[in-house]
Amino acid sequence: MAKRTIIFRADGGSTIGMGHFTRTLALAEMLNEHFHCVFATRQPTEYQIAEIEKICHGRIDLPEDDSHFEQFLTHLKGDEIVVLDNYYFTTDYQKAIKTKGCKLVCIDDIHDKHYVADVVINHAAGMNPLDFSREIYTNLLLGYQYALIRKEFRHAEEVCANKKYACMVMMGGADPFNITQQIIDTLAKVKLNNPVVVINGKNSIQRQKSDRFIYLHNQTAEKIARLMQNSKLGIFPSSTVAIEACAVRMPFICGYFVDNQKNIYHGIEKNNLAVCVGDLNKLQKTQLTEAIKIISIKGCYQSIIKQQTKFMDNQSDKRLLKIFQEL
Image (cartoon, rainbow, N blue to C red; front, side, top):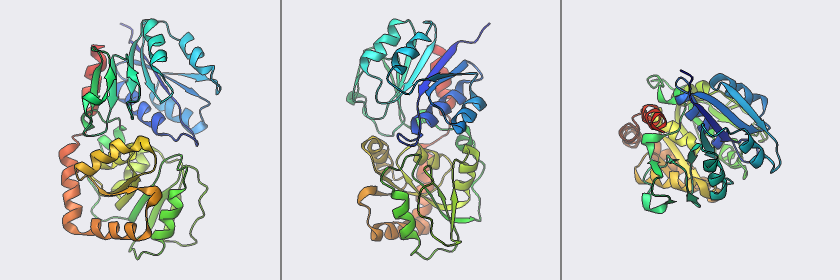
């Protein structure tokens, strides 16, 4: 019997970041043994193509201009499951896909539109179903039970006892306000016993001329998970990378720099899953150094790991597979 097709539609790049692309591909990875998975995206880089080819059975390349909306619809026969992940997919666009006869799943951050999708996934902790405008049949999958994280983080090995790095800094693929640079400049003045590893998507920061900093670019999920396990603490935005850190039981300092990160941030803050410092655009050097002192306290450090273990059971793949099989 032929496997049913799922078409995943998400974009990524230096301007919008890689969050939508990464988490949608993580979902494809959870489902690819049971479904025929196709990834549709605009102007993928060599890195993105390589990541897609590891997981999916096919790829649809779409144009960069707005014709991508209509062109994507032409690829739909009507018997597929479609997964959408971005803010520019409107209610009317959802309806156009549903009119084709497809089942529809939307991945959400800011619930700023009415949903006619069959399923909506928002993996921020503490979301209120009443905040969503949706059809009566729309199934909401909310919280870490449905975390869209890659297998390298869900199945991470036991945390390393002897950490190679004092800190890991990762602001994501876009970092439009160059927060990475501000953090590096502050850490350069903090006494740390081990090097700081910096993963920078844009690779355009002014590097400190010091062997205390190690700079990396375009790392695989396996390498990022291993770096997390080998770092004493992390400094991350409240995006998917923060949920991945929870999955590997890594204490971290957390903030946000765009509105679509606030829901994940509030869930992390409420459940004490990290040391939270608020808006990273307004972060003072003294705030960051104080946060490092707090998280380094043994009781705080262990308490964060305990809370992460409580809230993340790393079984989201099993739950999501069941949902998709029932569509």
